[in-house]
Length: 383
Ligand SMILES: [Zn+2]
Figure: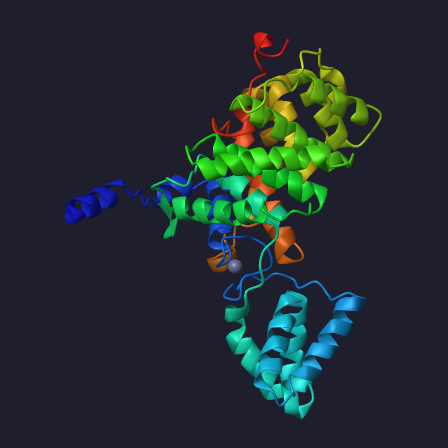
C-alpha cells in the first residue's frame, strides 16, 4: 500500500520546467525560491547570493549595531551569541558592516565577525506580513494551492503555499493590529486561500482577517485598494452577503484623490457596486509606467485596463507601448539566484516589486485564478 501511494505521488508530481517559461512563471519561482525557512518572505535569506543592494542603516539602527558589535568581545558565550543574533536581525545593511568589520574592525572582533558571516544562515530573521502576503497571492493567483503537485526548478509549490499560509495563520493570533496595509493584504491572501481549500483553520483565519480589517481606522489609498479586493474575494466565496455599501463608502473616500491608484480603485468600486463606471476618467488615469516607483498602482491600473477595454486591447497596449518589452528586459538576462526577479534596493523591495509585477502579468495573460477573471457580482446577490 505504501509503495502504491509513493508511486501514485510520483505519478502526480509535475516537475516540468516548461510550465514556467513565461514572465509570470519565472517571477513566481523567484519568489518561491526565496521563501525563508520559517515559511515567510522578508529580509534576504542567509543562503541567498542575489545582488541585493543593502540599504544603509538609519541612525537608531546604526547605534544598535555599534552596541551589539561591542558585545561580540564579551567573555560570556551567551551574550556573544545574543549579539550575533541581534546583528543579523538588523538585516543586510548590518551584514555588510559586519563584513567590513571582519577586515578593518578592531582586531579582537575580526574573528567574531568572520564567525558570524559563516554562521549567518542559522540566524535567518523572520519575514513580514506584507511581503509574505504578496508572495502568497502571487502563487495563489497562479492557481497554486497547498495541494498543488507542481514542482518547478526543484521547488514543490504546494509546500511553499502551505508553509506561507501556516506562518500567516499563526500571525492572526496576535491581538494587536499591525500596520493597515499588512492587515489588508494578509486578510486578502487568507481569503483567497480559503476559497480553494476545505481547511477549517484556514477558513477561521480568513474570517478573523475580515474582522481585523473592519477594525482598521485608516483611509490610506493603498489600504482601501486592497480592502476592495478583500471584500470582493469574501463575497465571491460567500463569506459576506453584500459588499456594495462598503464599496460605495470606499469610493466616496477616494473620489477626490487624483493619484492613479485612487482613480483605478474608484473605477473598480463603481464596476462592482452597480454604479456606472466612468470609463474615460479611468482611461485617463491609466498612463502609469510599468517600472514606475509604485508597482501597486501598476497592478491596479492593469486590472482596470482589462475591465475597461478587454484582453485584446490590453495586449495591444502592452506590446505597442513597449510595456511588455520593458518588463521582460528588466527581468531577463539574470542567471542563478536572481533569475526571474525584478531587483531593487533591499530584498523586501525586490520581493514586493516581483510579486506585484508578476501579478500584473497574471492579469495580462488573463489567468482564471486571478482577479482578471473577477466579474461584477450578480445583481440579485446584493439588493
Ligand atoms: Zn537569491
